[in-house]
Image 1 (cartoon, helix red, strand yellow):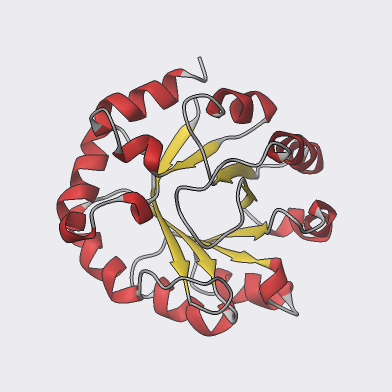
Image 2 (tube, one colour):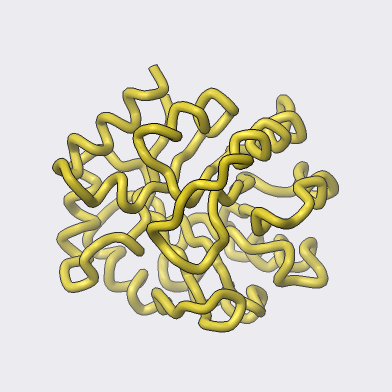
Length: 215
């Protein structure tokens, strides 16, 4: 069954402590933090102190997606504040192996990702060194965007690159009840969902529907 990582970018920031507790009860598998620095992407979100405070409210693993210009400088902040998995953009580092090792030094899981316009083949030399590959369904930087139609093809290409390795494939951006089955059929193991989790129905109902799409 597909795993669900609700993105707190779509949550009401006034109630994040209660929200992460409720998400755990609702059946979420991860808590996803879209960390933006206002430089690599034109938005600013989630300093490390937020993770530290929210760690008191849930036992779910923290899935941190760094959308920052200098990921190497930020890794220690988030590792020491409660991250369990840190994903960084290959476009943001000149030495991805060094960035991977910095994350490993904290005994954390490592993810890599690319913007939708970047060549997916850039992941090939690194696939044996990571735990997760994140395929972006939208341009990073804002929530609530429309899912790019060529994303499912990028998921399939990524799944082919992963082959039989023990590497998870996560999809983030524009996920809804209509395109989630396409992502799952293409090979997604984890769906990052914001609006689909936090709007319309209850958290439990929305997460249950998303998970049920993989049956």
